[in-house]
Amino acid sequence: MANGRVGGLGKLDPAVVEFQKRAAQNPQTVTRKQRQDRKRVRVNFDVPLELKAALEKIADMEHEDTSMAQVAALLLSWATRAYIEEERFLARTPKFAYNIDVPQRFIETLRTF
Image (cartoon, rainbow, N blue to C red; front, side, top):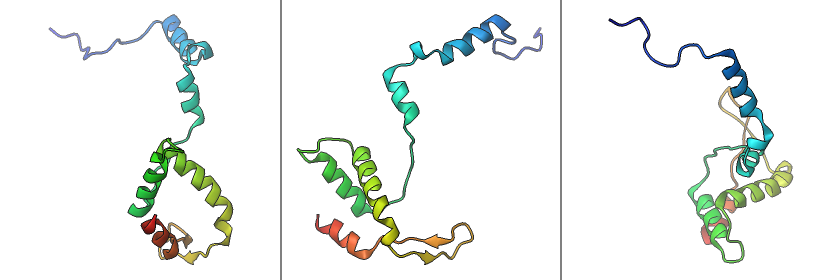
């Protein structure tokens, strides 16, 4: 007959819990990739198809030979400085105050790239 225990370890010994906390925070046990990942922030964006295609082309160029994410990060950093010069339009949603549309001339440039 079952004793009411469904599964799992139940209560762990307090010494084991303390050891697990220390092991998870021990800097000597963290790999280089884990340290890099802790510094990195992931974001997802909806972008026009032409922009994604241009980023892929730039990343695959022989003199670049890098990831699309690195190209996007570089170009976002660069474009952020120039952002203030672009127009903003009042949004039609209560969630955002403004809509910022990608200028059509940018899309045309991407199509010819």
